[in-house]
Length: 244
Ligand SMILES: NC(=O)c1ccc[n+]([C@@H]2O[C@H](COP(=O)([O-])OP(=O)(O)OC[C@H]3O[C@@H](n4cnc5c(N)ncnc54)[C@H](OP(=O)(O)O)[C@@H]3O)[C@@H](O)[C@H]2O)c1
Image (cartoon, rainbow, N blue to C red; front, side, top):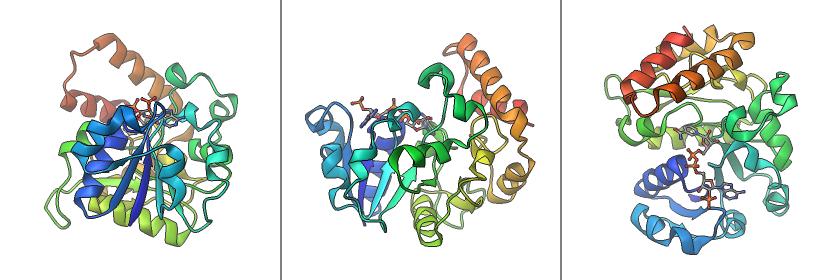
């Protein structure tokens, strides 16, 4: 498939590498311009482009940018055909993105995302840590394969997203509509907790809407005070315990 990835950081670059290795034609864009990611794009097997080029003939567009950066992206989608699948990997962190009253008031993050760009999104890869994405993937059917939640409204779009998730080394769990996608947001039991598909399904069901933001902020406070002292395993363990 022709895949345009906007955002060439922790998530975008890792997805570019995996999807290019899977045989897809991947274009990669950032905000500073293609000349700044030439070496990276070369290394991961993608073509460095402007974000306008990334969406121009894509069949799938993956947005791997900070949540606040969705503001002002609407024009980019003006000429993108309706059948093009748009995948949202973002998460809202008020300390990083600035407080957003609507989302603080309970609007699911990806509902807000799709309002910014004026078209539906599928939410995927938001609930996997970059390190897990890098090293935690396994071939389909392998014992202990981890799973990633995928939410969205169009059957074809969500199926495409689930197939791509599978190609990046993870089982894809269909978690329902974008309205329900708060169940995989930061501070929920499904968020970055490295679970297999059966356990992930239970975690998604166990999510408590009124607790997620508090859990998220408590975790962030803890991670900030620990600095670089926490290992990846400790971060996952804390994600699991705070949201249990
Ligand atoms: N890190 C994780 O473990 C993780 C896990 C799951 C989901 N996520 C979510 O995934 C998203 C990306 O996270 P990240 O850690 O990959 O971030 P990151 O490393 O900071 O990279 C962000 C990328 O987005 C680009 N960007 C920002 N604004 C843009 C714009 N308006 N147009 C085009 N490109 C833009 C940046 O380009 P420039 O450098 O040129 O500005 C950069 O390449 C976030 O919403 C995050 O919450 C992160």
